[in-house]
Image (tube, rainbow, N blue to C red):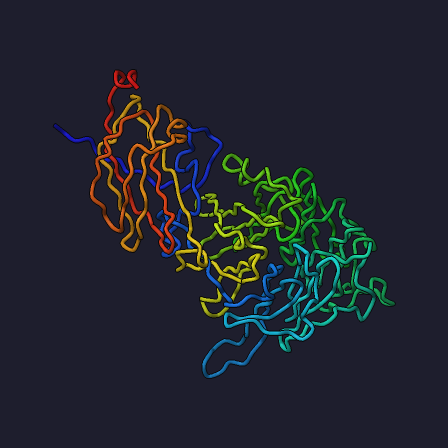
Length: 523
């Protein structure tokens, strides 16, 4: 008797999708997964795998158990030596408990004046690199870090005065067109302030001689204020500065002292507060909407098109229920994996779900850290000469600076709990039997637990209390298994909870035998 052909069970490379219902699961997606990817992080092959872990970038805490509040890096010109061709020196700089310290992978550097220079409790601190120095905005203090001499000093105005209001200072900062740009005053949330070009100490808005390079603010220029509360600023290009606001998006095109103007991009969607955006190498901006949801758009001078909601129809429901009074979102672009990483961290601590959006196959992958101290309170993409220094840094609630480590099989001492449901598997005739199951993992894969969940419908199979079949697959090609499970719908679940292990999916084949309508009436 002829055998039924083996059907390949494809890895759901489209990631998580929860909008179509169980029977009509969107092809190439999964209804439930955690801590997995569509591309193997160890090789970047297009094969499913457990995500990589995190490890300490710096072995010691920045400032005891104080949460990391900000991460950045600055590049200092240097002369090439006999041991290196590089003409630059890269140095990280972090903030924890209000204390500022420089760092490399070898450790932190004590800074003169850095202890307690900023707010010890602010859940968000902004920073910007300008002319080889790092400037900070925390809502209460103005300070600047000089990495060349490891000194933190007061940031003061030599001309005019730095913006203040209501007993506070701005909380948002960026650099655009050679100007330091500030915003986020509690008492003046629609205003923006720009230093003179290439001079972070000049905030004189009314000099004796008016020039195109002088300092300028929204309340004393024809461009005017932003008609909404500013939540984030995106220095997109030399021509375009984007303001993500509470319920709208506005765009400044051109320098405000040289005829620049402000235009509305959207009056429907706004952006979340803080570092709620990132940009990919192709010029696309991704940001978290003020009401939730992941959006993308490509700004152009003059009149940018409205943002597109890229999370729609897949994971919107999971991103629309975030309480912004209790959480802060932080974005970073991961260039190696072509992925938008966004971390949603409760300010009071606790369990949360973070996200990776892989633009190569438009896939959303949810992540969780079992140790809540690992939830990022700051993130930053380093840009070093050494490949080991081209990493995404994540600052934890416990004061450690960690990195996403391609070779890590655990999260700095905590097991990565990964799983994915593949399916539902169904037959046109209704009832079918899985007579054979063959799994192939990578030759370097660790073991993975395999379960077959079955039921009278896909939803029934998914919510079943016990699997109908279970086994373990090891690296490489595994022996054929004979589950002999019969039902109307099935899910194949792969999972791993073992410390120090990681698995990679190559292929799975199954022989599915239709049992006909009569068998269906009996189940």
